[in-house]
Length: 286
Length: 278
Image (cartoon, rainbow over all chains, first blue to last red; front, side, top):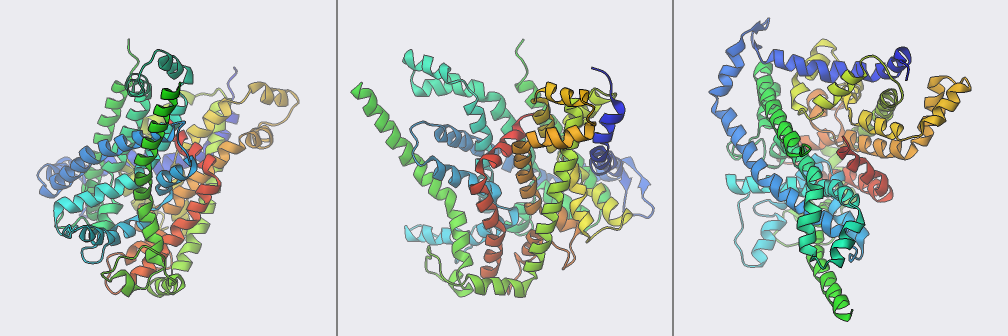
């Protein structure tokens, strides 16, 4: 194939221009800003100004701890649920498939603000439907937003509700690409459905499960809207503050761009580490 | 044979017994959103359990409009989402076409950079983007600020590259032999063939723009320049605000997307599942 530089770059140029200005350069710039003291005019280079502060900042470690805690609990629960949804939606025995698909996939189109508002109202202490339902079966009300543990639980429940179906869509597409004859052979050999799931479905689905997990980890790592709106700016008392929220407060409330960039690059570092784990988990076995 | 079909029936019953409650739980928040949006505020904040719709939706819309110019914000959101979707589909399909169709200097590098940075968190570019758009370009609270920066999204490039490279090359080569210009081949041969993929991509991009919250919150914070989710978000947490109104706003944001989802489910699902092809 001959080279067609001029033609190719004419098609590429508009996109590459935007991509460079609003994605590539900011990635580099953010790194540079993180080494500058940005509260003085003009900014001055000071490699330890933000990073030094970061490693001694209790607010940073609180946000990091909360973010990791949400990650470690919410992502596995959600991925497990998504696998269950995908496998069951794929069952030939299922009736009214369209209705079930609608129920699980509909949250995918719901915006963060809309669903944050609903969850906030549903978990209201005195008038929320959740506490009313708890009371109606004789259980006491839970003060969801005044204590850290239930507040974290609400965030995890909300995120799981919003994203489980999204992951199920990706997993379902993966399931449907597994050739049927593998299962037919296994059924003829009287391999039980459960064993088929463990020994056929899961291994074949593994790259997609890992992909979903990585996508979810990187998404949850940036969690912002839910603690911003549902638990009211990371409340109670910073108990649900995440890295995303801390970045917002530092960057856009205190206008401390250098420190916010250091926080952003901490998240990038975590994302890169997780992507490397993904590559390692899905590498071709030699 | 009969024992096998009996066990099949048992499995089918167990399947539905498990999945039905789960589906109801999953629908519950959406259902409550609708219920709340039809209730007066004193109904929402009353001790009784209300699970059926009332008739206060229009009053709530009025309350919402009193709290913030939501209809105006919806107008901004629609215009921005339509423009963004069109531009992004054009830009990314052109780029995808170049990557699928031509051999050129630096191709490997372009692909490597796109793939290598796609999993980086968006948070990384947030600060420089904000400084650039607000301070250097002085574009805060404009439509350009809402539409142009998010066009960097590279999902469409990969998606369309995949779509175009699966098409038979002979088709395009034949047109070229006839002397048809490359941009005409792209516009009048390749794009029409890619219609289902374009539909899937457009839906995903429209949804992303419609629901986008963080960037519009930061860059267009002035009343009158806010998108609908941002305008709605400003009310959450305020005292003396109509929660029935907030819920009516949530329904107005969500319902159109649910209709699109139901009508175009196939494209929708194709678009999301395509996130997995990397």
